[in-house]
Length: 207
Picture (cartoon, rainbow, N blue to C red):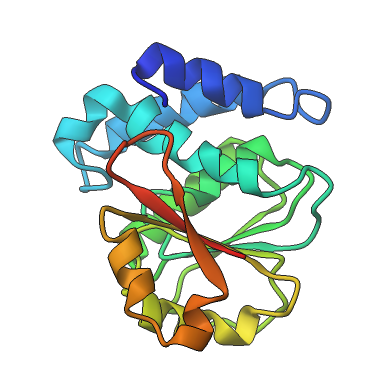
């Protein structure tokens, strides 16, 4: 379990693919600084979570990579990415993997586009529209953090999903409950993993 900000930074640094990008931690420091500044103008993250931003947001996003082998290649689709979690963090840590961030709120989408440009994340695309309006493609990974109830999320992402798609869905304390509410056939396709950043939180992962 990651306990504090120092531990969160160490964890993220260990997850960074330094063979592909030696500037990952610098980019994340710049992302954090820009996020805290922008949070004064629009509510990207809760004010209480600012003091634990590496633990609550950066490491919380980076931990999803433990379920995705480094040799995995193909588009990573992040639904309802909000402030860029986990999408922007994944784009920084996996510079060789295409990442598509879907965010329909204009101000947030504009900020995401600016950050992708400032951090030179050329492999990161921002879709400033609802997921229903995004042209379908085969996603290798689909993530969503506090985006929609599980049945709705699975329905919206179905046209991006193939037999090879991995789902990584942080669901907080409701993970086990939401999974148990699915029909048996769908429930068998997923399991819950313990979050490393919150002892009470779970991540729904495709089996």
